[in-house]
Length: 112
Length: 114
Image 1: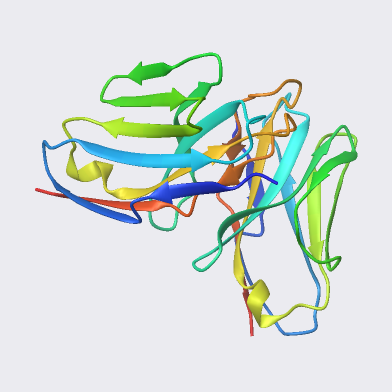
Image 2: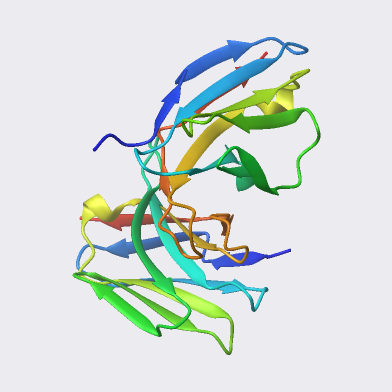
């Protein structure tokens, strides 16, 4: 089955800095890669996603890049703010059946 | 448009009991999937239903089961509860009609087994 590795497990940055979280996947059939943000006690919320026919996607301060050959994808957050502090999960869907395999998560802490 | 609704939000059960959790997907969504979230194992896929049929199943014991009704609402059941079943159970919905459908999560049901 699919396996998703996520690094780092924790990331501390100063407000205004950039943050990068990296994920690798094992199944070359995976074709959909969402990123979720989960605040303490809340549900995971989709922040950005990318499909395998696209190499990069941006939404304001957030961007995701995908390298299919290397089987890795990354989340980039620029001009970080304290409200970006949360746990971020990457995921991959290889089944085509709305089935996600998640990374272990990255706890991002943005200090004012 | 209402989001994914899960009930109950919080519950406490005793070892050996069974529990049923309910999920109502976003209107128009026919795919419902369930995930277990624990601090140690993270987010793990349980199963996915589409139009009342289980299309995919994760690596969980047979004590974990689910079903979907004709109105797309879904339930999952855990029998003979163990302490390790304490977790946040998340339901997610999508249209389920093509690969790469956006998947939306509910607020989850917090299960504590004592």
